[in-house]
Length: 182
Image 1: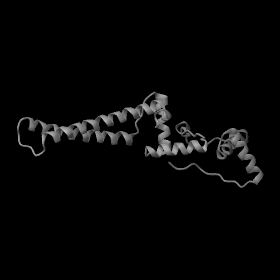
Image 2 (image 1 turned 45 degrees about the horizontal axis):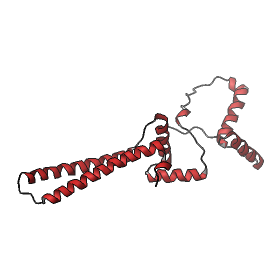
Image 3 (image 1 turned 30 degrees about the vertical axis):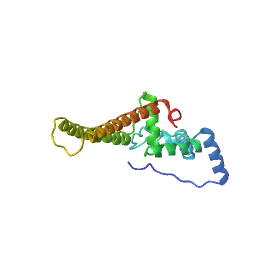
Image 4 (image 1 turned 30 degrees about the horizontal axis):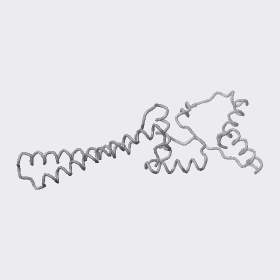
């Protein structure tokens, strides 16, 4: 997608200061304010009466949302997003989706990593169970029965720990970070 055309203009420092103050009052960027002012002027001038040729439909701007954050909140957002190894915008989108839809999200990267861990633990447990069955049947197997049972307990504990981690993650999205942080 090509970037929209760009208009630049030089203004006096006083005009720039007034524009900045007005933009802050309207809670817009300076560019957004200039664009809105140009639209008003063009709509009210004779140029607005000229038939618009080859006008492409405007893209849906509701797809993107801009939010102003306090610098300290921005820093916290960056830290929390970094802790989950995702960009801040992805983290905010997941939080917002969780709140609006009432779901407890697990970011794709986290979900895939934990799915792999659970799958590996399941495979190890399955292999250890086969070894344990062979031992129970009296077949000759290199590891001792106590070793195999200890490994089964370790795998079970790891599996339960990962499941608890997933449950805590879902709960943290549901109740907010502050209640689950230690």
